[in-house]
Amino acid sequence: MMQQHLDGVRAALRHNFGYAWAVGIVMAVVTAVFAAVAELPILDPDAVVAGVPAYVRMPAIILAAIAVDIVPRVVWRARRDGGGFAARWREVVHERWPRQQWVFAVGGVAAWYLTYATFRNLKSMVPFVNGKTWDVELRHLDQVLWFGHDPAVVMHDLFGTSWAAYLFAGVYFVWIVLVPASIAFALVFARNHAVSSWYVTAVAFDWALGAALYFAVPSLGPVFTEAQRGQFADLPYTYNTSLVDTLWSDRTAVLNDVFGAHTLQTIAAFPSLHVGIMVTICLVVQYGGFARWMRVTAWVFLGLTILATIYLGWHYFVDVIAGAGVGSLTVWLAALATGNRVGLRPVLRSSQEPVTVADASSSSAR
Image (cartoon, one colour):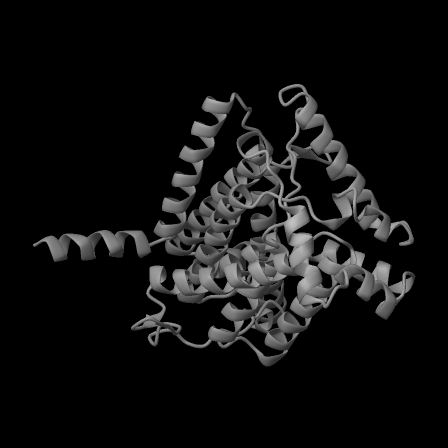
């Protein structure tokens, strides 16, 4: 009887991102406790960008993706078969967006946003909960691993400090856009609920484990430390320079007046979740059987992200190693949580077809 009850609980959690919701709820409780005990605010992450709050932007991204999924099909069928746009609209929506798909997509984006919003708030609370920083120790580990050298200096000597700065700044910008776009892709275009729930759950676990490690090993990163900031003085002004200045200003404002700042501080180096989430993406597209060009692109972009995060001074090399470990571990944990496994080995559920790019272009002709 007890085993049947446990099996029922596991099945309920596996359905519609239950484990992601569970992690998000735990993170929300921890956020509320820290806010109450340390007397800290809880804010909307990224509060307002271009006049639009974050909790509006993410649903808007999903709705835009849904429109991209529907409209080309409607237009093609109306031109091919006639019958008017209204009739074709109803036909496509009935095929592509039945109630089950709506529940799946809305549940996924809501669970993801809960973990993301609490992650951002927890990250901002780190200096108030654990005031020690480990930058000296992390830099020392880097120098041991790099035979007495600082990795960023080696990168600058190898790639120079001109065109490479623009390239790696661009990589960092693309990553920022990539995460919400990948969630939209998983919930709208990749019509395989097994792999989509695996990915969204893994990213939720990334946020949770990343936040926990921020509290355990608080650090700033080379570009923000007195001892290493000068190593990046010769880099040209790029989007990355502006972002560094903004994040440092936000941190200073928050530490000086946590309620009056009306923003969150988001500086934390260990582990690198830029690397961690890219590892998660790479492993999921690999296990999910995505098209070869997507797998190759993901792994190449992971390599560029690793180079960028060291070159620009956001992270230590040991942060990269830790980030890769986090991304790998969360994919495995999410595989267990969502039933994508054989024993303890991650395997996409055999009842599902391999994933391809959901016909956003070619199948719009259907």
